[in-house]
Image 1 (cartoon, rainbow over the protein chains, first blue to last red):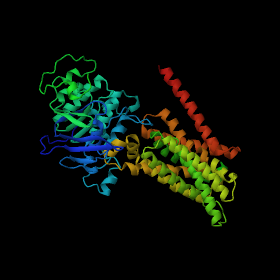
Image 2: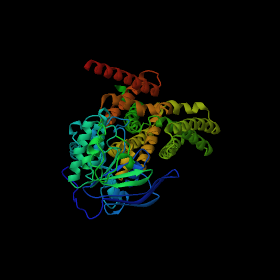
Image 3: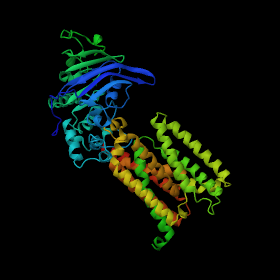
Image 4: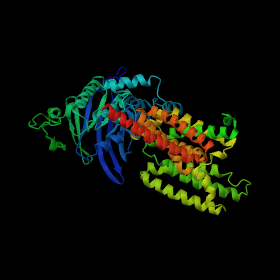
Length: 275
Length: 278
């Protein structure tokens, strides 16, 4: 990305969630979850099914309301205008809709929305139209995830991994300083996982803060700085991920290595699903 | 060609062209949202609006009892579209919403027309279309509404695509998702009341959806699907209307039958081409 978000050593956290509680249909799903991520830091949000990982990131991006707690983004309380500055990749099975759309069309749609901090009517109206350099930026974003050659292909005909990369490009086209990804590796082939790992490494070098929901660390394990583990809506672990998670969690890899690195925790104690 | 100088033929063709181009624009968004039958639901509510317009006309003792039929259809269709959108956004299943509108619209229409002292025969023109009765006033109204549909539907294409493609992502970017969803619903309602004159309530949805279905067989991008569908819609309506100038055939039924036939031919041809390439 030629206009990256910069400033790796920002004085404040890009995201700081404190004691966040979320209830859905009268049932509390998150019981006071906290998380921080700084520029250039990659935080893996992990846990089993139903642990509240996706609920938590959806609360951060404003897709779900919180019942209590605080979420600061870029050092200020999160508002729709502030949230528009982050890049979000929702959990999705496919990038396709009811009508055929090309990869570049999907990515271009990521350029809409609030572009200004003030949220005035003028800037909101401008946010309904793509900027003049939309196509060039969309191609740049597709190139950053290694699929520029697929720009004019129908996304419904792409593989699961390629579709996921289109959705990541749609988030990156906004040139965010903070990227939030909800299970981007679900249903993704190994080749796309490796390409995705390169993208994450590159963004990290540029100082982008990344929060990524994962079942397993997989190919991107080497880029993860911290693992935050959720279990039944509570944080059960927040610290350095065990070093070998990046290798053993690759598809098809049999877990053979004892966990000896600090903190000496195995999957079960972290509340993760086994490999 | 002298037929083209006939004012009635001119009016029919102009309205047909406008409706044929505008209807697939909104149809593209409905197909994208997997709500292809929404037009049918709103169309049935519009029928109740037609009957309510008749009832209002008789209550106010208007000389032309159906003078308020179209305004009634517009009002009811927009209210219906807003209700659908609100129910959908609150998680009510789209199929349930459609079913309620279907039954509520038809039953309400029949009851209201009875109360207005009319008969179900009065509704037939609206059920099956009545393009041969268009006035220059209808032409201007259709032109204005079609211009609105085309301007918003094409002008805000990227934003409306973004919202109909991935609502959660669109919301995270700060797009006014609820407002844009409402724009789609209201414009769909406007499209239906404009197209109702050409093909009738029962087939109005077909004019929105069938050209899009054909275009999808031919294109791979959202924008091209929309433009090709607009072209197909225009050709279908103009062809259908032109044929009915010479033959005593119901225009709405003919236009839709032409569209469905075109779909079958294009589907077969593309399937054969793919087979030959393998």
